[in-house]
Image 1 (cartoon, rainbow, N blue to C red):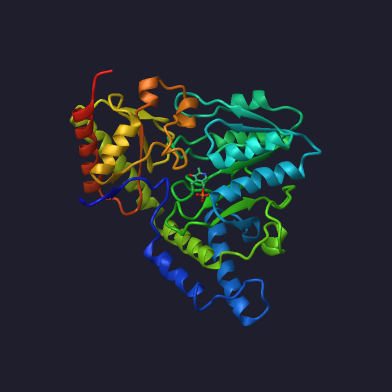
Image 2: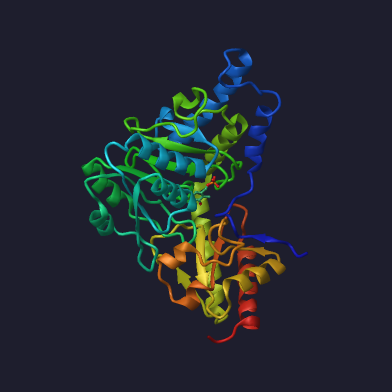
Length: 382
Ligand SMILES: *Cc1c(COP(=O)(O)O)cnc(C)c1O
């Protein structure tokens, strides 16, 4: 096996050594239940609250506005279902987009099944939702809008400020899934017109199974996970203390390195595109040419279909993806590319490379070279 090259960081990232180190004592030595009144409990609670402060601080929130969850999926579910159920007397209409993560889309489908009305907004060919579409879709009974910050498949950054401002004036709740944007774009919820925002630890070198939902103070919300009075009665269940401590440390490292990381990702991206350019490999960039998440590069090689490309990349030790981790493994075309209305050969040959903190220029150059070789070897003119 040659040295493997991991270019699928939008699916998940490795735990940073500092994160692992920070977590360990909270699995063994400090194992108390943070709800317990004794010293063991207090030790856990203290560490958890420090992490909460750190994560809240990184996004300009008050610590009390963060609810810890089991990840981005639960944060999205909690936002949509918690707000919809609490406001169902006010209205039954929800607006989202066709390019959301399945954690949002499937929660919306569930809400439809129990009597809500959902509008799924289209996007343009760059994967962008437009404010005008939101304005046209809004009805007197619209209670909630959910539009992601940055897309996980093609990287397009959505106009959430414009959309949020419009909704704020109308008193409609606005949720954004910021799982991919968190850690690569500066986020300040105090300045953003959003009421709820989801994040996840394992996309920023934290552990899997922990995330958070930021919630403005006056949001009318009912708990989604019922149990004890944890998380100020907003989410039942003993908190994942070690995971939360790890999340806090991952945010700390990200905070220190964010500027450098973004610069590096842009360089890695440029390097790959340059290799294909120089080697005359036919390719087309998917997503928006300027408003994109720096760590996501989605490209089509119209001469080789996605499946063939991914299998051949894997054979030479290169891990890339077709889009969301949940859709890979099935032959179905990604819902994001479908919504973008790309020409069939483009949509059917899209590959997502996503960068992380350990990737090097040499690695991505090699990956780009090998991708080009596959195109040359298997490519047939379509
Ligand atoms: C990964 C991801 C999620 C799901 O987060 P988990 O922590 O894996 O549940 C939600 N939304 C987006 C945009 C993601 O990339």
